Image 1 (cartoon, rainbow, N blue to C red):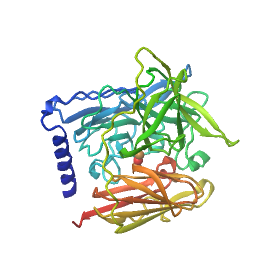
Image 2: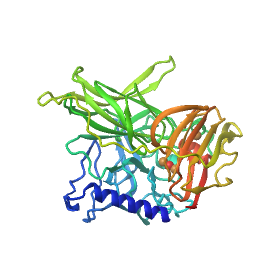
Image 3: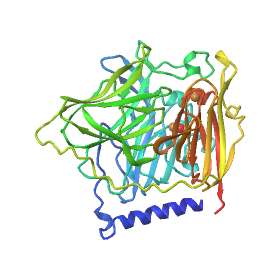
Image 4: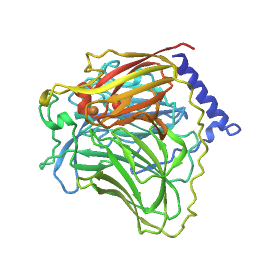
Length: 466
Ligand code: C2O
Ligand code: CU
């Protein structure tokens, strides 16, 4: 716990010195995230954000389609945007009005483990009951929240939302947009396709790939008007149960400025970004004005080796006040060198059994029969992930960030801090983490059906030796 307190103290010191001379009450309001509606902050204190979230059933319909029963936070799919500033305390008063128990997990946030929303630590919230989550937000970035009980059903039915932790003083007058990208499996009657975890359905084995792409809960592309030459910040998250999504921007100069763990030191351009389940990307997007439209497409590989394109966002251009095409003036991010590795853990991903009886394992065990892996806190750690299952697995570690340093023995350049990385079936991925958040943490495949069928384990980050 000591390092928690230290880190929080450090954050506050940094925050205070950043605005030295300007009294705290001059903080400007948080910028909106276009495309998402923020939950109101019910606490007047400047450094506390309190929101109320209630999970319940609701009905939704897509593009003239029939009505489907969804499970929603505050009646919305996705749930409301939760936003605050780095260093703030976030309080979430949660009420469960679902017919079954649930929790909320804050994906990517380095919270204390008691607030992490996992049933191994927090008793699930029973129907009709409440729970108060409260923690300090240690990192700025794009995150998300979702249940950690029967997640393969609860997330699929709509329980998911974006959580943005803004920088202490976010750039003003910069349009920010949020894109919660999901793929839902809907049958002809408009209902979610549901099945029990022990069901032999192949979707249950391979993970549920949907037939309807959703952006911010809708099946139609979001529409807007953009200004040529004026930079915007877009925040993307893949909340699908199983499907890896790729995304491309058309009609703009764009680059990656942030990943799971926040802004990166060296923004980079790329043809498309790959989002395994759970991954986030922050993009800087500057409409060139050469095309009539700016668009965000999800692109999916097709059988003929090409890409199928699905527009999620389409904007026309307003030329009344064109900008200069300048990039945003981001303050630099610290990239202190990586210390020498002092401990290692290995996670082998595989399956056993077959057909309807397959169990997905980590280190040969399913959840419940697993041996937790123990490491010292605050110790430079190599994490080796090996996938011998011939199936993709998006790996997610709770409570810590890691760097992706190698794939199949080769060094890679994937800048930034992550909590999610894709294994592709017969590969080895090398990660580096400081393991600086002590506690008991889940480590699992984020294909939620695989997690439900066993592909979860625990990493116990022990007390610091320093
Ligand atoms: Cu996004 Cu353990 O989860
Ligand atoms: Cu998996």
